[in-house]
Length: 298
Ligand SMILES: [Zn+2]
Image 1 (cartoon, rainbow, N blue to C red):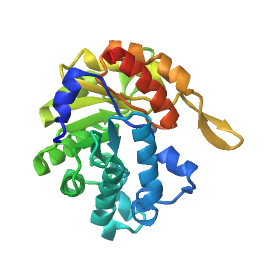
Image 2: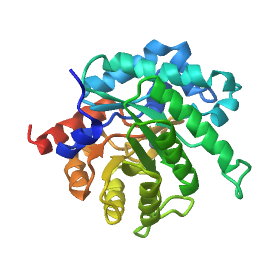
Image 3: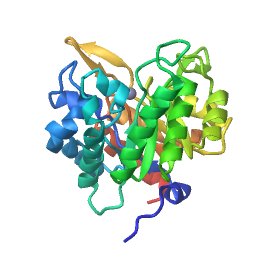
Image 4: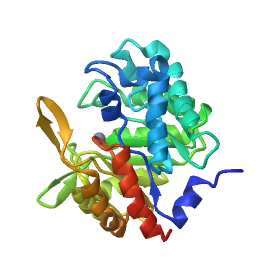
């Protein structure tokens, strides 16, 4: 059976995306300073298992473990010779978990980790080349969509979206990370939601939204601010509350029940796709899915 296109699917109902990968890998033993994406090659069964847990929790969409697998970031681990292998394996591991089922696999693209000129040393051409290379590999490996996320600089986000749009035929989702200061919603680089919506729509993003930074209560405010400036579908992936240090380890204070209790309001604010970022687990996604299903009238 042919899968319904993502953009058709989201027209009819609210979809659920998966939760965190990074904090789940840490729970599986990933140590500080280790390249999380290298696990796609060295511990593929662990990565696939995390994907499977999110699918079992009810995720309609899962994201490949390729957030930091662009050439510029992999260079820091001396893994620049494995850009193709790591990204291919990332999609393969996710597709293995999804099987022939209806779950969409997203090829995940995160920031370069560098500031672009004139603030930093990376040229726009170099960033565009890195995003183009990654997007092309993710698409060739069989991703159903490309998701650009956790971005704070608008120029870099636009480059990533344009790269994905020019190198693939896939729907492109673009998410930035916002802070709220006295009701003012901006990324740490000062990008407001109006600029974000205008620029990302102009670059060709099919779905725009926000991830990371805060918990679900603040995300409701951020989605409202985005919705004021766009008619596109909106995706929201809040963290599991805020990080708190418990016995020397960072944990998150937003329980699955707290997150689930805000889902209806997040949908009301305009979210068409709801997932989780840092600190969220399959338990969070399962509880949120129940609320989404109630809303979808199932
Ligand atoms: Zn996050």
